[in-house]
Amino acid sequence: MLAKEEIYSKVSDCLIEALGVDDDEITKTATLTGDLGAESIDFLDIVFRLEKAFGIKIPRGGLFPENILSNPEYVKDGRVTEDGLKQLRDTMPHLDVEKFAKDPNVNNFADLFTVDMLVNYVLTRLN
Amino acid sequence: MPINFNSTNEYFVLPEHNASQLYSVGTDIVEFSRVFRLNKKNPAVFNRLLNDSEKKIIKKCCREFEKTEWTARFFAMKEAVMKSCGIGWQEGVSWQDIELKKSLFTQSTNIRGELKMKIKGLINKNLVVSAKHEKLVVAYAVSLKK
Image 1 (cartoon, rainbow over the protein chains, first blue to last red):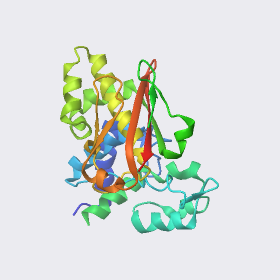
Image 2: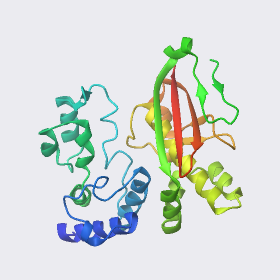
Image 3: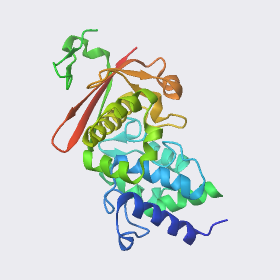
Image 4: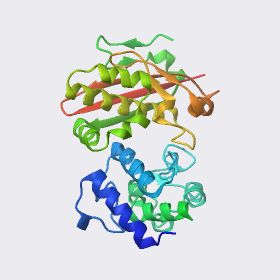
């Protein structure tokens, strides 16, 4: 089984290749969209590379919670509701939901998607 | 339901009196440079994005920028359609569940596979258009209620 540091190293390589960023830009807390400049089409590439690197299949919606912000039960007045947070906790154990829950403004939602989140996802899948 | 497309199929008009049939809307924007770069680095990615009929359209393009433009259109339109379905990307749903029809400025979609099952009973029809701007393509989609 791969250690977390080995997974981090492989994930970093995938992001360097997919996003054309320098290795010193990649940190555990770097956000994929804000810090590394990823856009929706880049996620197609990232997922593809992660699948190849780790020999896993990543379903759409498995890595990123794409049905939260579009659900009126989960978003009210620009904030993710308790039900939405619960849904995230239940279905996305690789996300740092507690940090986001301190200020669940939808504008902070993209901050959930960090390098460490990818590492945790892979770790969960490999385990 | 009468829906009017403009002459270049870059937008459509949903008559106000039929607005009650609107289920949801979706939109997406993609930069050509992103698609071009991805196609150079990792073209295999597009095998999971495109259906055979869409690949044929791209294959027929003679110039590189046309191929990039079409790939960007397909990506943006599929994202927009998915958003307009309002269910998010769920397990089992694939990019290829959305097949874009027509050869130029796609107007309608063929929804199949797992996505078809998930929207069954909710959505009657999906419509989508795309418009090219200087460096990007914008797609708009609407889903109409059953």
